[in-house]
Length: 329
Image 1 (cartoon, rainbow, N blue to C red):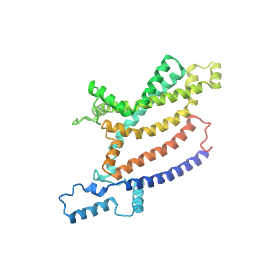
Image 2: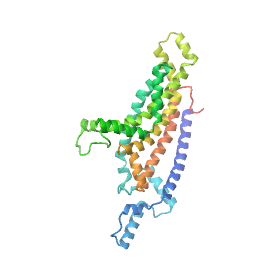
Image 3: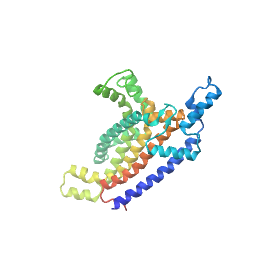
């Protein structure tokens, strides 16, 4: 019963914050200099004034910019909630038909990056905590500090120079090899080769931060009295570490991991641009440059929903890793 009340409260909170942010974002982009109708029409050098005005009125009607601002917002938000994200002035198509492939590309990049980070950072963090102050631990600490201290775009440029230009192991950028007509496994392998470098770059910072948080949480957990009691009872060291200590070290790890995942989607904007990876990030930048407000608002609201949902998922994850945590408390 308590969990149900909590989830209802959080849902109301999410809806309220969503609408407040949507109003702010809509007003900000409407205040941005530039006429989307003129951008959509393009070159007007050879168009007669009467014909241009007719075209302008038609496109203004299509985009809905000939109505009062509050009416524009009402139409936009109601359409968006039904899955209609508006008309793209850049692609001359409905946004819903434009964002499908870029969203899939972004999800691929982020999911593989998360898998790499968790498969390496969690065992590495546990190992460094168990071997605290050893040569291995100190070496890992140095590497993790270097990893999350260097900006991602610097790591990206180094990766491109070493692995793509010098060694020629991987392509410089893109999602697929230009002109390659492949299907099935061959296509998947080609996409995988193009994905290696951006995934590597996106994983470096996460490896450093998550490893250090896992290590710190495990060190605190291993100092607790219940760990001494478990060892005194003769339990195997693996059981003490992975069942008792790690379970109780998960709460701070869940917090950091949730916000890292949310930030990962936003941070992929730079990486996608550097590697010419056609995802939501590169589409967002193109939309900003072309004043394509329908694309930009759709992308921004995606990140807003992701952040709001992350808060609820984080709270629910607390109760999973630690039954002592009550959602309604």
